[in-house]
View 1: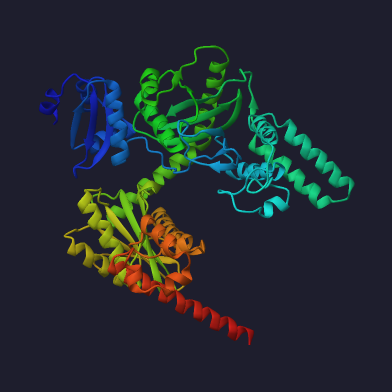
View 2 (view 1 turned 135 degrees about the horizontal axis):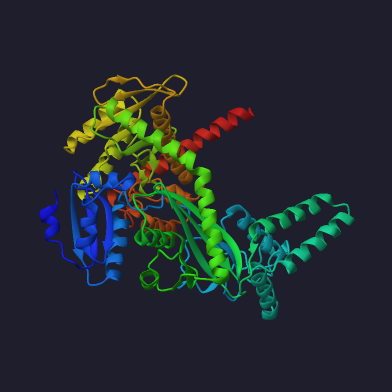
Length: 601
């Protein structure tokens, strides 16, 4: 059906975009020769995920570039922009932490994420897959070595100085040689030689035992175990100066198993693994994965070791690092070991993965039939959270084929005038789909809300005002707060077996959006700082919040400020909202005080 259009495609490099019947981009690729690559999709037979992709294609577009590197840059940009469902997408938003020892005059040791090797002028170690143990190691080193603990130097010494965990850099003269000695020992330790630190801990542990201080001895023993976990490495016979990341893969039955080995100072510092469902495997898919991995993790090494299938020159040009393919020797053995780990990991999980995919397909088909829809893939679910009937926030989670797309979750800070669930739902739905219309974002196949007919009618009212007809379903709870039935946009109750896969997946979505909305609210209110309290007021962003903090400095002074004083920083409407908010806070504080005094009486 694309014969005439394919005849016009040039034999040049570029990026192509596959679209479905709704005009949504479902796959982005690149090619040295656009005509040959695009023809391959529509000539011959395909199986598995590739067949699903081809069946979903209703149209395609392409952009010609002057080189393959330009086509790769364009491809990655478009993948980041559109999140196409058939491309390799990193579902997990986790990034591993690094340990940073700053190169300040008075150095600090801390945990950092999303680092950029070119921007950082400090000692960086990692990444550390075991986050908890890495944090414990930083705490241990900070306790053993009196480094600077505060972000900014104070006027006088703090508690850390009196505990012997800081040299009092703010007011004491500290010998540079002492600082250099500490720094060298810490760097040596974090590079893998833990003898200095562990020997010191062992001596302290023995001394504590001899003094019958078994509690302290046990604490020191735990410190040694934490260090062992954090710096647990597999010794491999490599040059001590070797620092690189190694990528390996194993592909079978449309599943791609990947392992990344982090090699630091010739030692295996840690590893990361993923198992992804993909439509096809080639150099492009692995390059996509590696680039996305570093967009999230930050690139901290000057060399990558990759399998033979990867176009190493193209990847090197994009990332601006050395990219090597091992042919023999120790690096080839390491690649083989990593590949074997990929195969073992995939085979261990293959049965579980197949069962999950069959269950999801079955549930999607059942849901589409139940709602009389041609198909259901993308679902957007909404829930609200509040504090004593005010200070509402909203949360939206996105699932595709019952898998979460965490990068697309959204939080909504609501106006103080919102005093009930229905008003909160109306505002969140309006803001979300007005934005989808204006920015031409992807529409969901289904909106999922936590509630019954009242919530359904509130959402329909907003969608009608925007001229949208998006299918809608409500998850209704029983008197024990357990989901027991569904309701469609016509108010019809839909019977679903509580033991079915569909019910299980819908309940997961409901639990996830509930957790997400509550955690956002909890984050805002539990920080207990003036800055976090201001975060609750719609219209006050980071810039205005900083201005308010600089001008007033305390909640008391802000409460005492007149509307005119607030309007020197805020617009009239936002200043009024802030006044109302502060007044509400004062009422709640008085209520708590009255309750406390009654309890005391």
